Length: 100
Image (cartoon, rainbow, N blue to C red; front, side, top):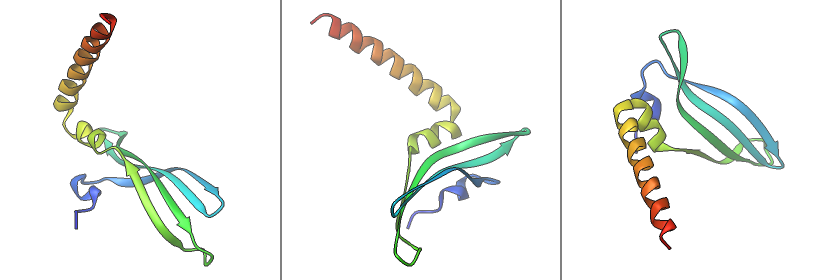
């Protein structure tokens, strides 16, 4: 069993951003946030989807989030380097496509 994500983020808390219901589906947009230097910093942005049974309880629940985004926010230097590489390769690919 993997550890819960907030154990790696001391002082973090969940913040519900938006809730939507359609039929037996419940969608929750949430963030894992932490206060840093007087400002709220979003560590993870996610979307949860639940299927609600006839008894009003969740039958199934799945959360979707970008794990790479969470890593980038914890290691800013890595995020900077990966963004530079992405830009470098995207320029290279567009130049190569122009040769066709």
